[in-house]
Image 1 (cartoon, rainbow, N blue to C red):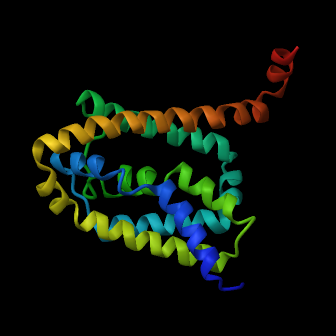
Image 2: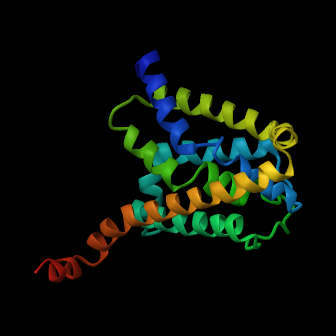
Length: 203
């Protein structure tokens, strides 16, 4: 393993863009407004553990359950889709009736440690060392923790109207991300499980 600052910076920027914790602020504020309990430390640690686990044994773990990366990503896209519907339509689909509230689901997974983050990590393994990826991932988790801890101050700055506007805008963006994630993985999933169908369609 070789320590490389430029590699760490590159991986950090990629993961930062994929995790997009700043883009999730309206969703986090919305979950808190519904009375969901969110613990910044626990959400960060759980996300870090999930992403680290998938970095090292992700593909093997999914194979144990007979699940491929594409199918996993499609499942994640549905969860993101329903979260987006909550934001756009003002309905409640996820109930915060567990002791953890929204800390584990849907915040830690799939919002922070989602299918996009996991598949990106698996892809980065081909280009960068585990050491540099782990450092970049840790730095991203520090950013995630800071954002989760300061959402109440951000909420005060934006006000009720600002939050409502952001909620609708980011809800539509989240819908787009869910659809993109679904579309980009459905073809490979069909090719894996139904190759004869693609063959017929190609004729």
